Length: 150
Image 1 (cartoon, rainbow, N blue to C red):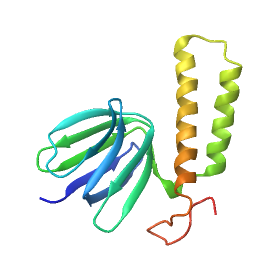
Image 2: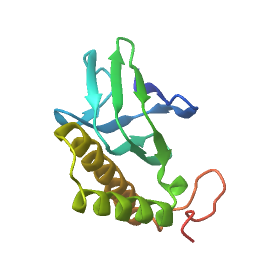
Image 3: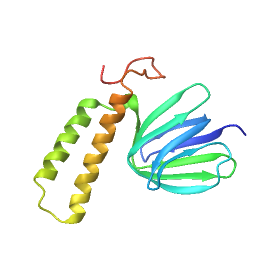
Image 4: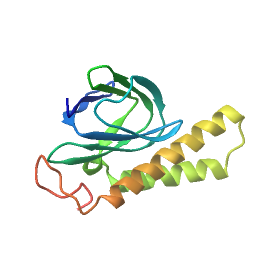
């Protein structure tokens, strides 16, 4: 087989279901790239950019965390807490979330568990901003339109 059968699923929807030539995703062990014939594996995802490449298209997505599972037979499933295509990210909303998280960090007076939650929120909003700005010139492959920022 020269392709990976891939599904990216969140509690709300199936974000992407495609045959891919490669998949790069952010894990706790660092960025990994999965190619056809990859050994079975389960890894924890961290907030970051997922790059899925098919024979004809590249997909750039934000994932907030979750798990990636590589099975025999070139089947890969990602169960993500949240995920969105680069063109679905609302830059203004991401900016507002970043500002709120930065303010919460400055005013923080709680315990370490609460601090981790605020720091994670900041990390996610910064990652979403980075992805939408990095790919702002790219079109939505489904509509041919620009990003939500245009």
